[in-house]
Length: 243
Image (cartoon, rainbow, N blue to C red):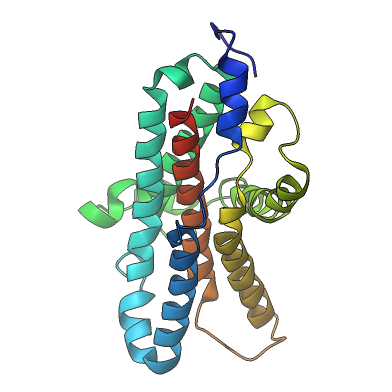
């Protein structure tokens, strides 16, 4: 990893920090994704009216609130990381965290249409002509601002949340210092599998390959996407602490 002023012992400390992952006793890494999936499925199955009126509604439903709060919390973690000496001295790590911060701000801002849902302003007429949902955001205007970032995140979840943890568990850290340091640990597997499972359900239902299991599984998929981001940044923060 390129650094500005790395002391001689920094490499060994970096490698030790890279090896860190949540221990067996930290069950919440597994419990929260599993409980989230179980609760959502139970409410959707046994209380469908409540699910439709309180969990799913655009902008005010419980899931929509989480879709703002989780990336917002991720942005706060990124800002905290950028104030830490360990990060300031590691050039490429600092650049990666800046990218993560921008991503979290973008997601949180887009979920709230940059304040429109809170302050209830009208979408400018010129902008509404380009936004398919008549909102002040970018993700409803173009593939580049919606499906492309989502595809990148989905690749990161599969590669970083499923494949990489198994490879690392079997062979140890791979790649250079930066890649190894940024590789998610095995504890990210449950949230990653949750995202994949609900994404698959959404695709199968939309293509009428299965009967409806849950209404609008895409909303639950987003919940797991943003949970993945938040969990990952918490792990990254704890690794930086160990530097």
